[in-house]
Amino acid sequence: MNHIFRFFIFTGIVLFASCSNDPSEKKEISSETTENHTHPEVLPNLKLNNNQKWKVDESTSNSIVQMQQKVELYEVEKNKTLSGYVELGQKLQKDIDSLIQNCTMTGPNHEALHQWLHPFSEETLGLAKSTTNEEGHEYFEKIDAMLHKYYEYFE
Image (tube, rainbow, N blue to C red; front, side, top):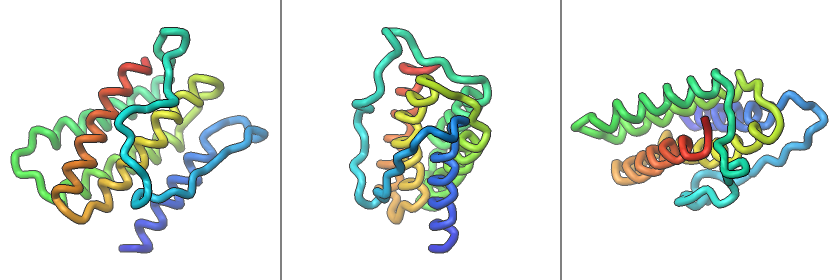
């Protein structure tokens, strides 16, 4: 199980770093793990684009909608369990991996998306490795809030 988790982290980092179509662009990858990070209550570096929402491509928009639907389906579930939280985290991480792999965005819109996506990905990794129901619930609530926050900044 530990090897599988490491594989997903490594894959996520590689895909996250390779999303840009500009090979000359330098990437900075955080080595911080989900055990050491603080949960973002707000996204302090993310701002609107001159009081307008950032534009995302159709593929990105569809991926976000799919993740939102998964979270909403789990939210109405009456018997939330640790295994359910972990499974949801794994599904969301697969969606993020797919979003990154299919990324065609470039420029400022792309950079703004990553300011939201990186902390969101950290939270989904935390959800996927939750060890208690309470921890899973905490990650779930933050993920739900971050998905709602997404729509304040992107269209």
